[in-house]
Amino acid sequence: MNLPKRRQLSSWQFLTLGYLLIILLGSFLLSLPIASRAGTYTPYLSALFTATSATCVTGLAVVDTYLHWSLFGQLVLLVLIQVGGIGFMTVLTLVMLLLRKNVGLYQRQLIMQSAGNLNLSGSVALILRILRGTLLIEGIGAALLSLRFCQDFGFWEGIYYGVFHAVSAFCNAGFDLMGRFGPFSSLAPYAGDPLVCLTAIALVLLGGLGFLVWTDLIKSRLRFRQFTLHTRIALVASAVLIIVPTGLFYFYERDGLLAGLSPSQAWLRALFAAVTPRTAGFATIDMAHLSTGSVLLTTLLMFIGGNSGSTAGGIKITTFVVMLFSPIAGARRSSNLVIGGRQLDDSITKEAAATLSAYLLFAAAGCMVLAAGEPFSLTEILLEVVSAVATVGLSTGITASLTAVSQVTLILLMFAGRLGVMTLAIAFGERRNPPPLRRPTDRILIG
Image (cartoon, rainbow, N blue to C red; front, side, top):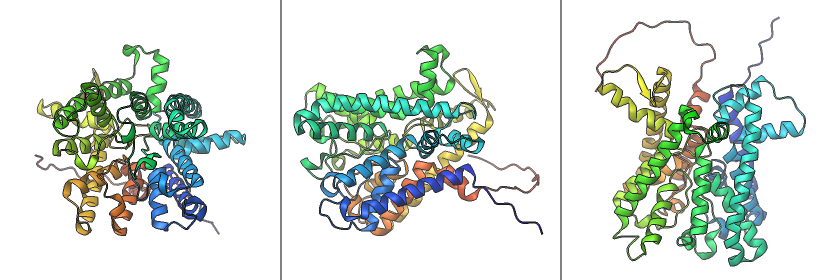
């Protein structure tokens, strides 16, 4: 009698299951009385929503982090943010190394998929670089933020605030403890503080660049000509997506939210508003009173997100650049996509198109669900949905008022956005043994 072979989970399924288990454990801990300031049980849906938002480094919240959660609850959130930010496989690999366990081929493949590594070799070394780099950057950020927070909250509480917000900013999570100044106030109380704002901006940008870019910058010793194409695209596109939106935000809000401010204060807020949608979720201005142009710009920036293999979400910068150049190649009747003097493989274009299509479908489905049961405007719903699927966390303030169905919808969108909607689709739809068929080819009209 031949026994059936035990089926091993694919790398995509393993990562999906890993994040799901972390969320379920976090939601259980957050639902306990010890996790709330009032010492009472938190409704499980609220705990699940918060755990998902933290693990998926989003920042959307149905309860204020400072006002609702106790120190224990906040520490649970901090751990979930850190695990979600650096990646489930990074933490699992660290545990295996501490226990002196061998990291086999299967685990190395998981690391490659999780960290966005292009090669199977060097995966463990990449994990160690990620850990060292994360601790170094978050440590410097925490020290800088603590300089201000210690003045305002005392030494020990100031240190805690510095660490919490440094981790939240670097992991692009957007959770904050500023509810002491008012519910869901984010970093608005420090909107005019260059130390806090510029430190948060730097942490967000470093976290959103991606671990592969860090490695390339170190190896090339900051020599642009020696950068890989991936790094060059990430750096140039990031610079453009900072400078242009900053100017546009200033233009859109010069007679609105920025009116009456000094030029330096206005430009600081405009810069912050341009950086945090990719995809940190902090805000120093009232999102509910943004002009229509600013809402559309924020939504677009959230949808693009950060760089591949980073703590950020969205379709990613490289996907955006590839899809931006594809119509240019098509208009020139060229079958080859060339960027930076390099020709990209056709599979890259197909993967980028699939990623863009999947995110659009998820966002459209989410908007339709929320629009069916919520009294809010389309712009508010669109920003909320894109904020969830792109794991940003910015909101016009409607999150806490959403119905249970809408909250579950956002939970699913945040989960899909953190894993990557294509990763989730592959995890559930991947065929292990595709049929050995070659279909006949045909042509259709496009455009």
